[in-house]
Length: 198
View 1 (cartoon, rainbow, N blue to C red):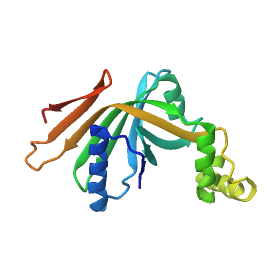
View 2 (tube, rainbow, N blue to C red):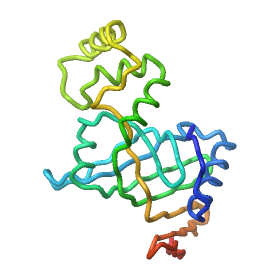
View 3 (cartoon, rainbow, N blue to C red):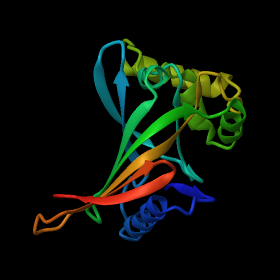
View 4 (cartoon, rainbow, N blue to C red):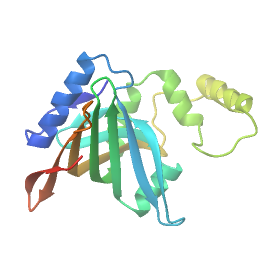
């Protein structure tokens, strides 16, 4: 699930919330899954991965990760990202273009302290995306973390990312293939609406 808090009352955000509610009522699995695409300035390539979108606070979309992970390094070097949601139960796709930044240490600590201890043990012990000899070795690292670490203290290398979209595209799939594509782009402080051909 995604938690919406003090949602900004602007058209594309309200449309997104309506489509989320429709997907939730349609019992969409993994409704919080969102694909984030970033650009590696070092390798000059684009990378995509799914993360769990936790919050939409006002106009900010927030998820959490290891700050030493490849995606975090890419966010640091290139602030522009693309985000993609697909809810198959309602045949809805939502594309966003946005700028991304880290959340504050205070926010991270507040969120971390309220999480399940098993999730925190994993966040503490994992050097995300680094190679390891075996899955069993990683399991041992996790078990050690679970027994020995302070599981209420958020490490400096873990925390949230917040992105604020400047572009939304809402795609509705139809059996006729006459799919509806409606987009909103922020220009000079105003959301400009238009349609795209399917």
